[in-house]
Image (cartoon, rainbow over all chains, first blue to last red; front, side):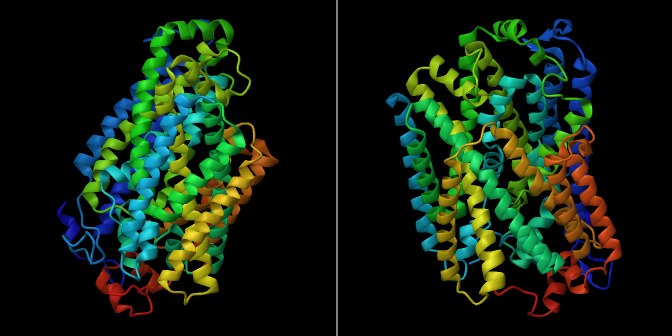
Length: 107
Length: 503
């Protein structure tokens, strides 16, 4: 993202532009967490909530509600995490003054 | 005594000691003035493999490997459902604290989250309350870890509980005291790999021995059908399920021993790779070990202590050499969590309390020695506490985790990303959240509103945080510059701000 290098004057001092990148990534993570929570809870409850054991159907040896809400959802969201980082997370230097390259052992 | 099981475990202990010796040598080579940082931070040099495994291994504690399967054994599939909220934890922790945490940590030379809070809120009250919170809660958290690890070894080897406990404590003490953060992180990789392999191998072996999930389910269906249902014996209603996600997913990463790892990686490439791979690895480990809790029901239908179901099953079903290698996995989980915590608690006592308030003029060399000594003493304290073991492991662990999460989440996250956050808000939020959490847990469970206690506690903590922040004065300009300004602006503030790092 090109915006990371442009200096930004919010208050009466020059703000570090890298923090805006961090802020955006915080937003993505919160959305991801909310989506994961809803997906797991909803799938489990809609498929299995309040059912007796003899009403359950099974997939690959697991109760269906469990199969869809746990292994399947986990693998799907592992994939989503991979995609999110690849697509939306920005490589930035982490050193104090923002210069790249001297990141390893400073001395 | 089963020597076939014991010998692989002893070999594993020797490998850990070699790692500790190697990192000790490395620390001796580090220049005066940076030894303490090296002991607690490893020189901020973690690559993605170290970062990912150190987060996963330090996070996945006895809860996942001993208490967890034990609860699955007793309460069924519902417990696996809520436990998988730890799958995205590494991803979320690294993005929520984020690169800002790593950058500010470098700018200010912060070595712990208490350091961070001190710079952000400039309030001795906040620093002291959070330090004491870390010391008390994390020490409490370490006890069930020790107990769990020892119980497991007891079931596995047939040796005496006390002897094993002392052996385990001495091993942990030695490699944490001499190796410091780097030995910790390196052994985490080894331990993480063992856990990953263990999760897959034991799972397949047990499943093959049982003849598939079908016979397991038939067995459960005929003896305890409620284990297959939702809400089931654990009482997992939708709001209860979702509130577990708050504790195990979103807020988990601010735990002091994990947050410190979110400052110590080398560059943004490392953190990205760790975030891409982390959820998948955690999925395999969590699912593997927890479904085994259910399989244990097939092999051991009537165990009284659920925690012992899985170890007993492994011993009976697998050949002893293989079992010994696999026991290293849960043992590894315990040890990697405990060593991380010992470092954090010792750092809090030495740097955040002693050096900050009692004797600020102490030299780096002396601090480094003090750090080692405190780590040793802590192991001894936990050892003594663990001699009288409690019954249901996981609940204790969760109690300690929740208290710390409620205390630290808002001060850290809002402090990093919200300029208005101030000391009054942080203080009120921390104190109010912890008090509420304790009350709900001990005396007034109805205040949890049918959810896990952390849900209403967080709401109270957040409300008080916002209230305090708007009532109190906004942070000083210097604080805003330190947390939002460029390095040039920070340098302009003058020497008073920059911590005394030579060179």
